[in-house]
Amino acid sequence: MYAVIETGSKQYKVAKDDIILIEKLDVKAGSPVKLDKVLLAKEGNSIHVGTPYLKGSHVICEFLGAVRGDKL
Image (cartoon, rainbow, N blue to C red; front, side):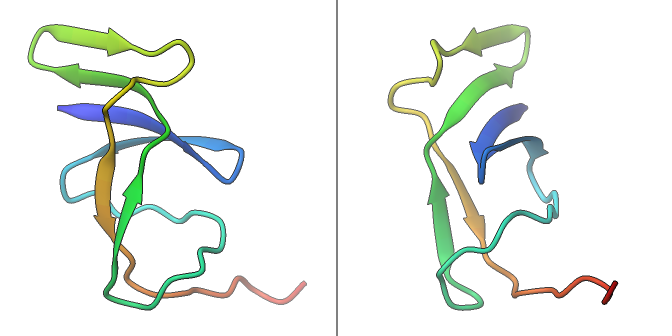
């Protein structure tokens, strides 16, 4: 099972136990985050595509903490 979500004007393919780096969020470390802009969801052999988003679908993830990139 996986989903394609949109956050910060970017799209990400996510599955269970994935760790992704996304744009800055205004939440505390360890807090659950509900991302409701789901573009596509695949479960088994069934694929659901939104127009543009799937109604009633969301992804719950945990905010692990903020990371700063290298200074350029």
